[in-house]
Length: 356
Image (cartoon, rainbow, N blue to C red):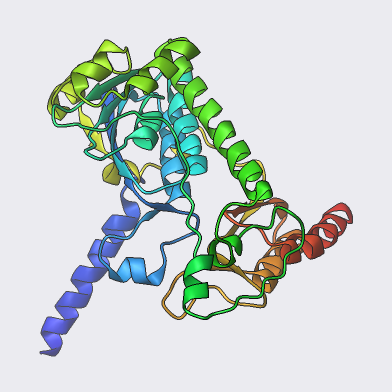
């Protein structure tokens, strides 16, 4: 038995030595075609919440996708990047970041082809992301009407009144409308003004982005949206797509070089394509419900934006002197912001950074 164990340990040691001596990263041949799936949820955190990881198919960090696209942008071995866009569970800010990253691929000379594969009652978000590519094809089964944007808001004030529940709400400022959902019966003037301004802003960006990517006028895009095209033939008639193909035909159209999946490509060392860090910055995530005090997650594993925890992280970044290349800047990515966090942190962090 001892002899068997000794042999196993020797084999493990040899495997470790072989792995250590193997050149870093996969071998990417010139003229390769990178295939990336863009679908599902992307989270603003270093890793998905615990519950999502236990569920078996956790959402990916958004930074992971953006980093992958940034590496591909500089990789001269890639002839093209094919983006397979399916149903997305993200907001418009994340969609814009992904779209910008796709556009940069084309600006750096990479051929980009998007393949839209969606069946839903509305495909605004998915189409918006996919339209950033130089070419856009849809599957024959795609049925995703491009119907424009709208906002829906629920108010439960009348329900609580019927249940005999009286709600008391305190707010600071006209536009603090979060409690209106529970205490109100309809939109206040301030709520309607704010919601309308946000929707108009997103709509203008949505239409302008499609128009620029598809070489269409703003009026033409709005006319197409008014028609609500859903069938591939209807999308083609309005100039919103370049045709209908199977996915293997799209990949072949990209140049016919060796296909590289994103799982393999993640192993590429950024330094091998020209990334040379000249500074160090801290990336501080603030995701989830805004709460006072300390903490990272709820008992169920969902992320929380705890004021004291995020404030301390930003202050620690400002004080970082662990190496000659200490933290030069800090970046906070937040879906929701807390006045308690920022008002106390910004002056202290700036003072510490300026005193170096």
